[in-house]
Length: 381
Image (cartoon, rainbow, N blue to C red; front, side, top):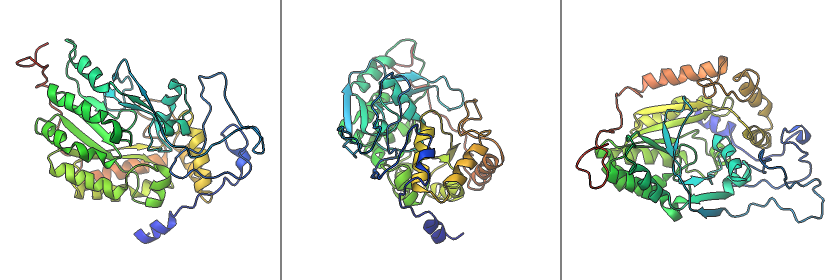
């Protein structure tokens, strides 16, 4: 299929679910509703930790109910911790830090949505428009790194939500965290979908000279119609390639995350993404296969049938075929790769094109040997 035909094939006009009462969202969605452009989720799912909830039983009800596209709220707080130990053995990180909880990018498939329920909010619209800002994040990191037992293990920025989401333009917490890491020679990895990372090129370049930083840009599709509704407030794929090129030219080791690959929507783009990333300076890659855990199952189902009524059944069943008849799998090592013919095909593509374009060929690691606390002459524990 030619590139133009692919683009035409994936042009999107938001539509209503053909059978709204069969949606697994837990209630009827009958009646006319406005599609919230610029948002991934279209409603709030139930928070499993809350006993009480507010619902609209009938669309013609006279109560003061709204699901309008209200502005994003930034909820500032003084946190107690910023660095978290990661227990999951299949995510490639030991520690993570996230200056923001919730993410305005609105990626419909984001696994971090479920975490928002721990804060008392919904994994749906609340996740995108109620952003918790950990205002004292840099101070907390400094305190953490000063602990005499800290062993300089690399820390992942954006292990949960994107550290360069729109809130960063106002608060610059990620910048503050990087400046602390640079001062201590603490190594970090970064994953982002936002070009705002370029604002920190100066400090990233300094850290790169000491092998203290490695960054990945997430690219799921080059189709703007698809990207605009699937991850509505991220930057374009074209701009993401510019990020890779500019930071790579500045000496920063750059890679791409292709995730998630969704059968019937974007899995056919893997080769094109890898080649374009390689041409712009990326040297390593990773990918995940779609899985719909917790509330994301309901959000994604609603999104899929509203935007792709012509192929929603097919896509949904392909996801089920890749997770033993379900749309989620909790088994370590399997949950983010899937299984069965479709998942194997994606894995084979990844291996084939990764080898073709020389990805992941280098032996490279972050330097943890030069960590030092202010006032120390060398690395002393």
